[in-house]
Length: 374
Image 1: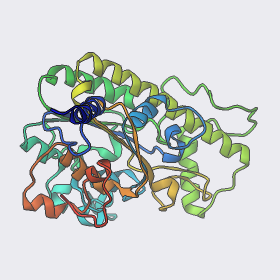
Image 2 (image 1 turned 45 degrees about the horizontal axis):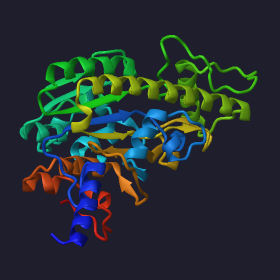
Image 3 (image 1 turned 180 degrees about the horizontal axis):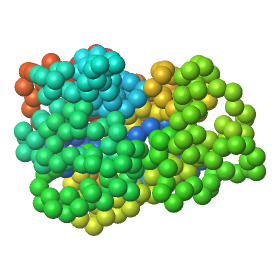
């Protein structure tokens, strides 16, 4: 081999070792997949996505060493339809789980269910299970309860907890399962409501980001947040002082920081299992939430940026150098991207079902002029 070719070869080999994959090959058919939902996390309140406060060091570390999509948009502004999009690759109007109830009247209340509303739809978990993955989900209940069809394709699906619970419950359950299944190839869905308005830490708030002498009437409780949500829906606008809004944002920041710490604890235990170097991580949120940007609180009623601009991070095994992707992408792209990274050959039914596109081409640095699935 000529000297010049040797140098080029060494450089390419070093690049592959450093990044865990080449620019042309991102698939890892033997990798585990961990998909994490930080329910109700605004991209705008995430430090690595531009928020000035350093409240998300663990998430930032994943973003800075992985693929960070800075312009990811959710298909809905609340949990049930937005999350079902991940698992079907379809718009809410297509998978039809657009409400908690498919029928709601004085005399009849029927809960929505994917299998009943869209019996031919195949979920992400089902595809992965058919391709040799052990599948498990550990959630905070409420909007991702299995009753809506989120458990479809999962060998294990945990949602038997207090609605709107956080990672302090779902994460230990997930680690218990991992210890029993670490020698298998697996797909793990980890979810918590730690950022949600209806979540409160069991020990109460410590107000770590309330950096002024707040004299208002609010404490940050779920009851107060729920009342503000309902008042905003009823009147189409709230009337709060600047200090009230500043206080509520500080409460949100505390929730985010607490959840980031819990996620760090999960990753520490995960690494002890020897799984980090053979795992694809996908971190995102189903939607954001609003804190008076348009005179309301909570989420679900509108489609403003604070509600649908979500963080999206993909971290590959042994990847140490981050890459920022500013192209607009969608939560509808997550299912085809996961299947693309897993190197799974899809049948025509799945290809036609998914309306999104695999983001692997963008991750490879290729310009995508026309979006298509695989």
